Length: 428
Image 1: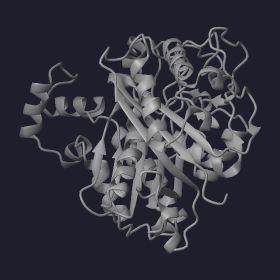
Image 2: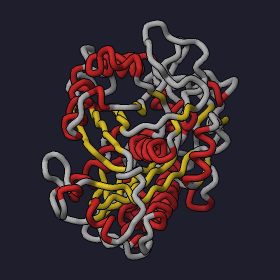
Image 3: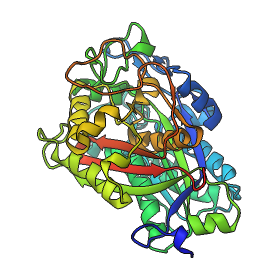
């Protein structure tokens, strides 16, 4: 390994050689990138189930994955498989014999309502009764392999490992909205430690159900601006009122730069640094002083060997909730100071919604494309600026810009904060 293949700390530089994306904008990198840079929204009215009586009736659901999309676990797998196989193919590798480890970010698994009702009916009841203990007892008396597989935390990663031919025990993690970025960090660290020359990292989330919608609604986290769905997600705007729940998957093939160069792979970008910090304040709210967010950003920059002035563009967490947007702006201002005023920052969630577990992975993929293509996606629906948040949000229209570095933020419930620093491919 030559000196040009290592970073300022002597660690292997990590290259991105494959990208895969599924979102409410469509399936595949090309379709998603074209829609994102044209400012098209994927938010729409929910047709998957009845929304009668619900305060929120819109989402960025993915409704085009066929039969596998009938359950949350099935949809999460179908999107992960689509994104993963696309990324492996782009990397020029065998998508049935990948030959490296898998790091998967997936949503928490639980028994969905249709299966709970089904179990209840096995016991002679017409409607579901409360109590998981009772359902477990029914399941013991009436074992159903299909329900068993749908409620295994590791099911999606096991299927992906078999499908893609990954090596070793696949890792499944769930760190709320930071999960996708955390999966990338695990892949980066494995390569830096010399455990592998390549890894595939995937974030996926297909968990839009009546139950999940109600839960987030009870937290007052969701937008209720249902009249014009595509205008509901409006990060950093004064009239923002909550995020729009969405689904999708993002995948990256990571390789050591030396291994990628040795096999003549096309390099689409670099992972320069990863930062994470925990927030001990509240299950859903950020610490008022923003210290964990600030620390996570600083940790990412330090890991990349960069000062704030070295960041050309910020892909914001930008959820469109009143508190989260304000806290992110506060954290960025504390780190970047006056530099922030001339640093463009935009939110992909204005178009694709908040893909929860998958967000960090999808947004990292979009960030690599921004570096490769020299285009900053817009923050759409920015027609009523919040005077308390003075940022260049790339309002409403994409912008051409030759950028060399991107900071991609992911701040999640439960105090999970992760930041990635990404760079252009060598010689690009």
